[in-house]
Structure formats: structure tokens, C-alpha cells
Image (tube, rainbow, N blue to C red; front, side):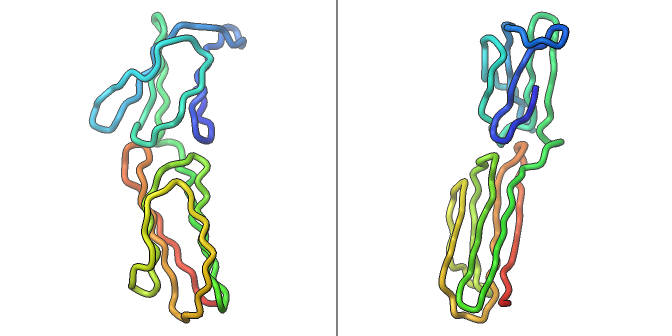
Length: 151
């Protein structure tokens, strides 16, 4: 199993060579629930789901598990401020859905739910901007905050 940017690649190797193999793949959450998400042959690639904390692949008497908690979400928020504009970009290669709030000083300016964000906005205010992101990764709530100061 290999965690890629926004998916997981499942492969069965025999003597170092990828081989077709019938498998069952289950996704596991943090409440102890297991959901079968694939019944078929590998190699295969499945979309990564941020609600699950691990994936298990089983075939015959073989079993393997990959824990998502050992992997970073890769979600990053960047902001920049000039004398007349504010720029906010969220890099999200795993395409994890997130909610965001953008504040100027302590007043909410914008909010939403998306998997990408790229804002370029004129602003002549001298007040600082703050961005708050909330998202699920490995079945747990994640949070990131960044700010933009005048240069």
C-alpha cells in the first residue's frame, strides 16, 4: 500500500513483481467501525477519504494495514498583505474539504466550505487579516490559523 497525494495505491507483489490478486479492502474510522470499500483485483487506486483513520487490505491469509495518522494532511494556508491588497491561498493537494473564516481584526469578513481557496482582494484597511481553517483528517478535526500583516 502506498499513500499518494489524494489516493491510496494498493499492490500485491510476489518476489518484487506486481501481481494480480483478489482482495478485500476496508476503511476504518476512529469509532472502531470498519467499512468494506473494495472487493476486486489489485493493483488498484482508491480515492483517499479524510473520515477514515486507516485502511486494511486482506487476501487469503495475508493482511496489511496503513494508518493515516502517521501521514500529514498537507493542507497549508498562506497569506500576504500589501499596502492595498490581501492575498490568501490554501494549498490542498489531498483535496480535503475544509471550512474557513476570514477575519479583519475580530470581524468575520468571509466564510465558506470548499477544497480550494485563492483570494486576491483590494483592502485599504490598516487592520490585520486572520484566516481560520477547520477540516477532517484521519477522522479527527484539524485546525490551522494564519495572519496577514501590513508590510
